[in-house]
Image 1 (tube, rainbow, N blue to C red):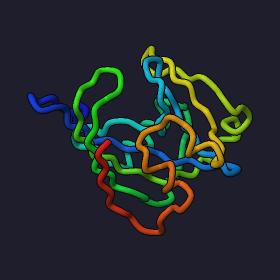
Image 2: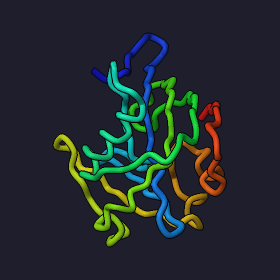
Image 3: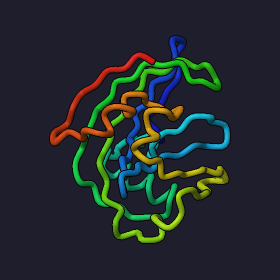
Image 4: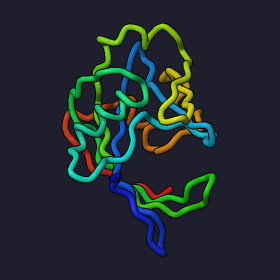
Length: 158
């Protein structure tokens, strides 16, 4: 069971995100309904560690194995989802993940993957484009250029 629940005031999510960088590009994705990019990852399940969850999500979404290098950010995010207009309180742990052993992932700049009957579009977005893209969380537009050596705790109201 995913750690996500709805209340009268909005939805709480506990999720993880994978920051994967190759040749000054970061891997981002969109689902079929979204007009914005976000990093691969997903919700943590009950009785699952965040580390296990991020690696599971990479396997489910991309069919790859990754290796966690280190945690980067714990983001406390408060936002209204663009499509459903649902209010969210989300905790997301972002990890720097090494995927260099997955050579096929670097051949195309854009590719499609399917997970549980849903299509996802993945794109390697160059660092010089990141600040202009429609992406969430917006802190990535600046923080992606300066990855922390130790976990940073952030709070965003979007």
